[in-house]
Picture 1 (cartoon, rainbow over the protein chains, first blue to last red):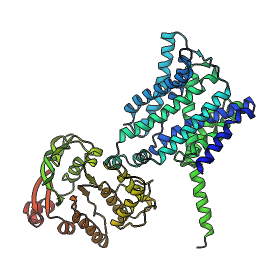
Picture 2 (cartoon, helix red, strand yellow):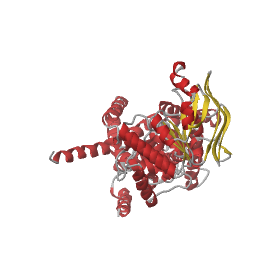
Picture 3 (spheres, helix red, strand yellow):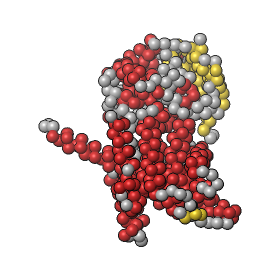
Picture 4 (spheres, one colour):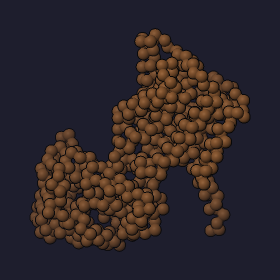
Length: 305
Length: 241
């Protein structure tokens, strides 16, 4: 029944490009893109509470792969290559970092993003001698929209599967107490590495699919660290431990950021920072959890003591 | 039949030798007390057996196979379960999920409907029947201990390491706790318990090993060991020996 409902909603959303103008479609693409990133981020970071700021490193890698390879092979192959590159980088990074915990992991992932950006810049300046690249693919916004919609559906399906499978439980146990986890027989490194990789491959694909939108790509655009922070705020706002939480967080925040960056381009990052602080303080478990506990409190009051 | 065997097991933390050349064997089905004053290296010894701490020297074998260099997950898969000196619940999980976490990741894992049945049975065994859906962080201290025991049992252990599992219980709870451990002994689980509660040691252990300053100072039948002059000196000082 729920599956049927989900399929109906998906089918309905697939008709959106034929019904709306270019600007609303652009907004929808942005929402889908961030929805994918936030859902993928929460898949790993929600249960483990490992705050990753490497989102944009993978997103950017995906976009750059398309920019570099789009004229050398057919488009589906380019996407596959992007996923492959994302997977290899995720495995390398995962093996190097997943033994770190807490703040060290956060700092490492943030540093990683800068490292990837600098490496790409270095390579482009010194080897290929072109900093920016043009992406010319015969893909209109509606094609990007459909691909992102499919990716979001796949991401939600994977997230749903993870939540009710053993690996999802393993991740929650690790998040609660890695010492207990290991003594219960949980293979900690393998579990974290698997989920981290799945999450990173999805982020890479999100970047790859959106690359044709920009036409012109350079490292400072696709490796913008603000993206990583936005994804964290979106997931936290909606609730990183709910299936639809990150997506529900992405919708209002993306629209808000669009409006802010259009109307207050100079104060944008200040407002962003304040919002980040407010969400962490006021809604540590996300709006969905806050709503539920509020509802529980209201209904409990109705019961006479 | 020897289940666990420690040979010259040593743990050094920098200049401090916490466990020094400790050797003993556990026979299958035994309940053995590991005694000694605070800081004598009992918990460190348990931590090395469960794979939480690497050995500085020596060897540990389970069933004749070396487990010296294995990590906790591998050792758990070979049938060693433990509880912790300070109870370690998985606070964001429910009571049932705490037990499920053990069923789901043991060697022959249990999942789905079969797991639900087993969770109920395991919780009933420790006196937590019908509490599976309760959040783990809402349990009282004794119930947390019960849950931790159910979780350890859910791994289907052959050897159970209990680290001061009875500490901090009131007299009534202590009675219940001793009965629970006695019931496990009946099932044939080999138990090594670190314990300061002497009534429990007398009631449960057929044999005791006493440690002092990282080394073994006594090993034998409980009554003999507790009467041993050196053991009394280690606990109470020279005047009482």
